[in-house]
Image (cartoon, rainbow, N blue to C red; front, side):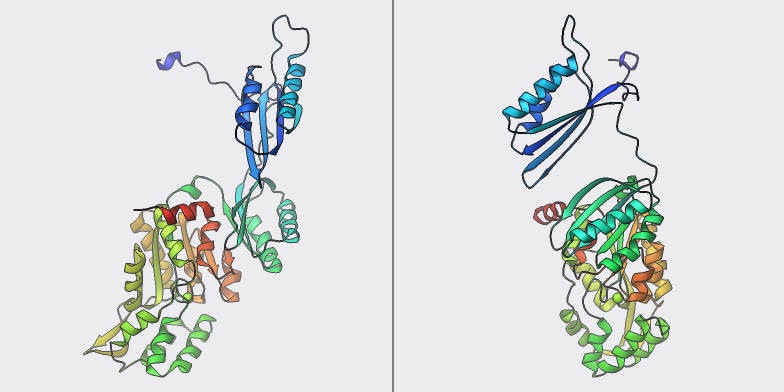
Length: 415
Ligand SMILES: [Mg+2]
């Protein structure tokens, strides 16, 4: 068929065209969808919209179809016949049917589309009511709701239209803190599905430890180092000064300690799942750390990370000198590295995700399209786009709209 022969596409019905909303509800089993549309096919109606969900074995199937035209020489109304036929089919299947007459397509959705993801542990009815009310208060309409995951948290996604992403964020962030759940608001649209880059902090984010404290334990200066680290992470100390002060305490340590520390590092629960799933979905993944390349290089190899950058402990004649070499990775450095990784990955900054827990992650979190504060200090949690306060790194996947089923599919995929 040449282009000129292609018949004009059937237009979405105008507001004046009669349409019927056919809703079926009942126990799900094979053949219901085929059965309904077989029944409707006898009336030559067009499908305008379909939505179907199955919840605990119960199907809700909604079909919006054009109203049937009266048959030639028919005495009764075509719509009346259709109603009677659908009801008798539903009865034969022990299903409930409802048919509502109206005109045109669905009401157009408001401008401004967002996805609001809620992580609850558990997710209570009270919390759900509060979130729905908060969304309504912004002028937003909840178009769809579905569950992304039931493990290790209950993750539910609301598709919202009619409100700006930024205003939803500003209303829902304090609500989340008060309700004790995690809520992420991201703009809907193509960029959500586009290939992205995820960049993580290492200490207390990708791993459970603070690497410098592991070194300090070998040097017998744990307490001194921990105190400087805590002050730096609270934002009370300049990171670079604190780094030099702490590394100095490690001067004279035997270089064999590096291997011992690598073995002591414990990944955060869900870290492997997060990285594996992102990689299988075609994301690029990197780490930036105020810690040390002596550890991040090993993590990069173990996890197959695309990018890794950190400070390097100077080792001369088999001993740590108490100095670092090269450009310091500090708060500004982390944001700079995110930009640089994004450029190398060919991913616009708006499509990047940064995850971190400390004050030195803040610039990076705010530079990324989505900044996730992971079990973070309050100063970080309050400044980030969104926060995860459950100790499972793979829950970040749900904030990206990735379902548990997809996570498990990536897990069992061979190759
Ligand atoms: Mg950290």
